Length: 279
Image (cartoon, rainbow, N blue to C red):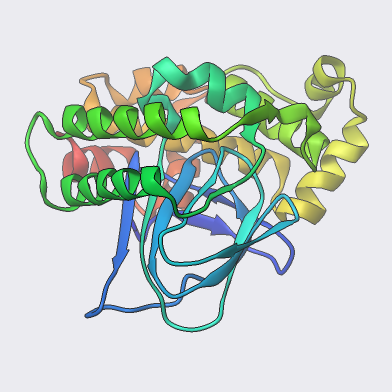
């Protein structure tokens, strides 16, 4: 994973801001490792397959036992964590749902009734697709890399969603937190404040502030900036827009504010980031 990704950590829950569209972690016989981390959530989809071993997977306070052959998934903004027993072998993928606009209605409004698909005949084929996604992410380069990854991802989710019943996300735990996070991720480029959220979501701004400070351990303004900078990184890598144009597009009032917030989070200026990462 990109070491420049910023994590807002706590013993309770942390919000992770990710600047890349795809991440992949493979653990096999030569590189065994524990699938373990504290509670966290992010805008990306997190899924994978347990190849060997077992661990405990929690999603929105529901506990699942992962065994060899099981496929697991956490939708955007679902609080999840892993509690490892021993070294395991697994493939883990974290992907930006915006790369699959065809499924935006699903990822934005639903959650799986079960976050785990137990080993069965169908999971063997899905496991192969996960392997192909990892392979493409780790080894493929060039102008068609994103197209290849998207093809595998759509194929995987097209089959997975036929096997995994979904529920309205409003029925899940932490509804208020999900509502706030979902609204912010869709509207971060606009003028946002606690008062605006209160009026739009009909949730007390003091309670929203409490969610950020006690659940996510991050200030509201820093959280919004993290979303804006994540989108700015994507635009800096992939577009020919100027830094000023990108600053305005992602919601920063002034170029100076953008430069200061970007450097604070990424450790370099937007211009330096564009020079190092543009494709």
